[in-house]
Length: 296
Image 1 (tube, rainbow, N blue to C red):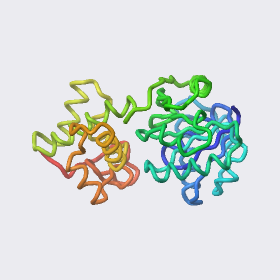
Image 2 (cartoon, rainbow, N blue to C red; image 1 turned 120 degrees about the vertical axis):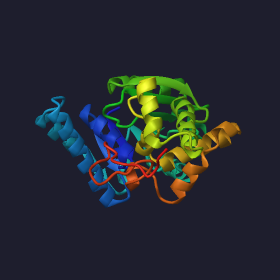
Image 3 (cartoon, rainbow, N blue to C red; image 1 turned 90 degrees about the vertical axis):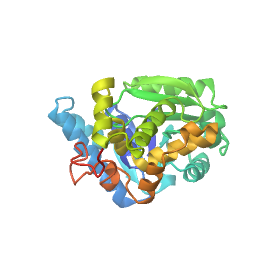
């Protein structure tokens, strides 16, 4: 695999494009919005500058990596030479199914189609294509250039060859691939989201406040980030979508999203991306929440 097409230039998409380009692959970054593409490319350059400041990347490496990324607003143009497509679009099933129907028609027959979905069924996505054996999940963690894990989700019809290719490719990217079966939430979010949801219920029921909950989990459980700050970082709307998938997929009330989460998302409080979630994030402070509306 030499030519990689990444669909979506948001947080995950630009991170995936950054990673592949830095590892020497030719990357087509595709987004229907020219503004989003421009922002995505600016983010990649900014993140590479951070690597330079830490001594993990040189200016020459940065220039070469950016040169390997070509942006497209046309899906057909962006995927016509792809050996691998990694879809990183909005976490909505209708959008993903429609994308994979198009990708199946627009990409070379040999291309592997991967989704970065954090919870949606790979088997369901594969079923709308004429190449279900070549459809797989490739769930990167955020921030992509830093986090080592790639959750490789094998759908019901994913072939052994496709799985082997993606496991090998993930290792080539200097990541640690873990193969998992296609069940709601896979492994990462099946375990993580109930914990985050329980933290929200703990706040909702007035047991204590936001910073107190996060402090308990950071200092008591050695978590690098508290669950409520992590939820803000992931996006509260994404957390809600994943919990809904888990709830619907298993039919178990333990996965029912906290009413507080439902109300916050409905009101537009989505975490870092909107400037406020459980914490407030003034411009330029996304890594350092400065306050919270909640108290114990």
